[in-house]
Image (cartoon, rainbow, N blue to C red):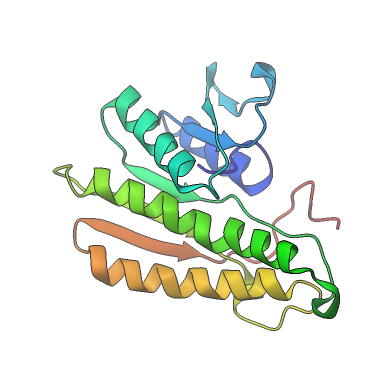
Length: 182
């Protein structure tokens, strides 16, 4: 689960742990061991990585499949963006938002697909989308554009990698997290 330390990603990680799965999460900053998602005395394994970098994204997948001998599910959850009016967004800001919300999931999906295509049972990639990818997104135009791209990427990969690897996008709407108040 990319971005599995807080918010939606943390909830997903805890749900997988509750179901008995081994869970690996990643993020740019390592949380204290006590802050890792946990359930029933089991904790998620943390791998430090910036998934906007193709090599680091690939390393997370390699470490996961190396440690557990397989990779059943990838959840591309890392993402987000502060609100910035489109007219004021710098080129660097736009680039970083698109890298985190579209390019990073693509890198992670490519690495996961390489592993899953070799497994007898294949695997599943779940991209976490946003309503901002489906409707106007004033104040977060780059984010909305990236999430719209993620929805299209999901559809393309689902066709290209089927039937061995299933690729889906979940757009849940507003979720009650620590960031939801913003």
